[in-house]
Image (cartoon, rainbow over all chains, first blue to last red; front, side, top):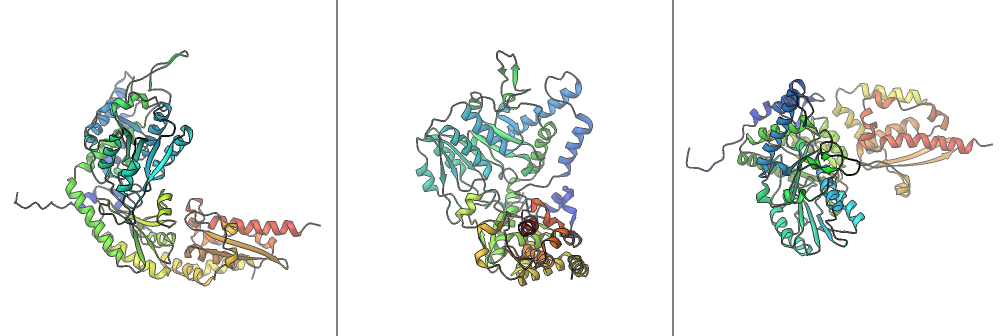
Length: 413
Length: 142
């Protein structure tokens, strides 16, 4: 070891070689995949693990006495233990869901059903939220006479912390906040805000959908009561999500859905519910996905977090620098702490046209409101073009994207 | 020229292009040359349902022909709309209704007609036909 503190760079070429889809072509051009905030691509080991499950280990979990069922159950519970360790939680605090959206709906519905919310109480959200962290709360607010309050954002796309502080009051019952904005990339100071919520006795939920593919999040450090993420945005399969909830809360919350797995005894007179985490996992789960979710996290954690962060910030800086030089282009979201996401509008050019022109060069970006209509309205726009990067993207791809974007704008104007 | 002839002419034009970039550059030119809709019709009333991009369509009926005006906030969609206009504008309702826009698939642009594209083009094509049907129904009454 030398005495310098330099971080050894990420071996991006090696990482790319593990992700087969990155070598395919789109309309005759090499794929440049910059839609990672929508979903990440999958490493071979994740795909292999899915195949292995169906080829060699498929059986329904729990209560099965035969060997296959025992193996499948063991593998799924091993994955739960692994994810619990990774998040700094207990295995019974890890609920498998079909995604972040379902996890948030579970919390909102179950708390409401359990009469946790007092009529007239407030739920605090922010302008940065994805619709998945708005609509479930609106639904319970409507049903239970609650008020939705919204933390404003600054022109830079950061939460207005002074306003946030002022909005948190003894009347606040839940603070539900995204860790990282999918539309702008803003990384929020969630630990601070969660602590403010705790001071007034409010519950807190952190939507971690955009965090898990970039960074590690520890529940003890975060301090939130609930945390949710989707495996597919962190190199895992679609249809799998994780809800973390404090055991003492989950224990007191009523089940979200009824069915098999979630009961200890069913009688027509009265049914008794299973213990955690099974109480919240009605029906046959997404067994293969739940098993492989851990595989994806293992793959991600094989790369040093400092190296991932350094590489992703290089991608972000290069993209920001190159795009700022384009005439008439305005980056929406210039927060100090950002995930590698660049969202922008171009004067006189529709984002839909840009996406088409980039697609014919093999570049995948996303356009539109990104399921954040209140945020778009806040900035007075109908949508943006968004390039979102992952650890497997290269600086050459960023340059190619910027060159092709510039060319497309010139043609479209 | 008849509607089938115009459709064939467009297909021939696109056959000359070597790649996607050329096709889209041509569509962009078509969009730029289309001209804008009368501002009176660029309203909610004449907005064709889209999502990512919007399309406005106005139609009037003069001397047995349907006259359309169309616009879009996205230039490629507007270019495609310009081609649809070349085929259907100033035609009788019967001609319009008898000839579906087969050229769109033949020039490789069928992806833009997919409902998931939400670009308003599919709705626009349907509206072109609905206007024709409405005029036909209204003016064929005894």
